Amino acid sequence: MNRLVNAFLLTSLIAGTSLVIFSNHWFPIWLGLELSTLSIIPLLSYTSQSRSVEATLKYFLVQAFSAALLLNGAVPNLWVSNSWDVNSITSPISYFIITAALIIKLGLAPCHFWFPDVLSGLPFLSTIIIACWQKIAPMFLLLSLSNLVSSEIIIVCSILSVLVGGWGGLNQISVRKILAYSSIGHLGWVTCVAFFIPEVSYLLFLFYILNNTAILLICHNGSLYYLSSLSKSNVVPITAILFSIALLSLGGLPPLGGFINKVIPLIVFSLNGNNFIIPFFLIGSLISLFFYIRIVFNTSLTLFPQHSLNIVSSRTGNSSLSQPIISTLIPITIWGLLLLPIFFLFI
Amino acid sequence: MVFYLFMLLLLLGSTLVFYSLSPYYAALGLMISSLFGCVVLTSLGLTFLALLLLLIYMGGMLVVFVYSSALSADRYPMVSNLGEVVLLFLLLSFWVLFIFEDFLESSTLFNLLSPLNDLSSLSVLYDYGGAYLLVGGLALLVVLIVALVVSYGSSLLALRAS
Image 1 (spheres, one colour):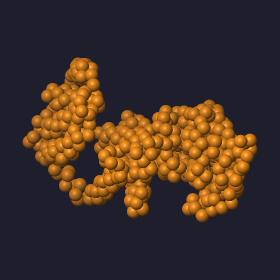
Image 2 (cartoon, helix red, strand yellow):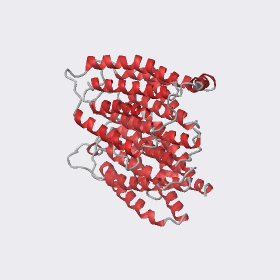
Image 3 (tube, chains in turn purple, brown):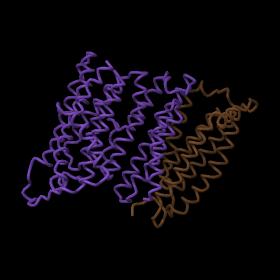
């Protein structure tokens, strides 16, 4: 696509998300959500392959419907409280409708069905936009609503998301679908703290974005679209090792940084005496750890007999634009557990 | 009661939109729903918004949409299962009529002698809400560029995978 058009659409995408974050009135929030949805359509479908076009259409329909539902939910609040202000949700019906719209937009369970379908039809750079950047605006809205009204619907949806993210990714061979289900599970972990301390959710969400972006960029560099291509891709050797460690960090193993996404919700739950829901989260993340280890296994822990010549290139990807970004994000992924004391500012 | 009838016809128009198998009758449903939306707005006293809707939406966008869908859609347009639509519609209208009978005696009907509520608040859109207009204009520019980029390069200028 033309470079100027590409720059214009990326600028309007950033402008749309910023409009959502910086406004107090429901109307520019809706406007910003629609603007970001609209400006992303050519970015997703520029290859004009049938899979990308289908994924783009599905994404657009889901996002447009949920944005309309959001505006529709802000109107009963206007009826009751005479105010378009985001910080004055006085009607429980409007809170429920707005939360439902945001859950559809984020892809939390039980409204997660569009997410693996959309992600599996897109190339990896578009996947980064959908899975990381487009979650910023609805997550921000959900967390700023949780500052006002604590409702149990978020806990129910996050438990369902973690379980769905675990069980859904078990039988997949497409790496994009696996990462989609892992993203659903991670968003479950991120939003579960919103019932108690919403400020901490921002921290967990930031960590989720950094972790996910690192892995998706490595997959983009090596074109790792299916499990079968994991063992015969030519990547820089250090990338193969760091990819495996970053995946284990995504799964939440303790000395790595991804553990921060799991230990902070567990601390918050047990400090609030809410020990009953902890096993659901642990079961879901244990199952998702299995398919992360499956990817690690297929990448660097086995040698397949049919791949008799495994060419390891030492020059691939050294000069691409994503290499310095990967180099910045991977240390945060691995050493991120050192950031745990920041959490203790919020208790 | 008349107000309720207008809103029912609005619902009939939008039902026709999603029950029709070809966009030809869907455009007809859009016309019906926008027309009765205008009538509902007029009966509430918001005459300027009704005029705006009629001129711009129905007189501009829908005309273009109807022509383009008549050019590019099916040869034999049809509405699916009209009997089911009519039955569901009658059921819904009589059910609401019998349950919400007190609500239907509305007092906001034919309020044409009230001050111009919509015009006096429209002026705020140009005064304090100038930023909304600018952002709205930016969004429309983005829509134009997106529509052009999406339909560029195909032979028949439709959103299809080549």
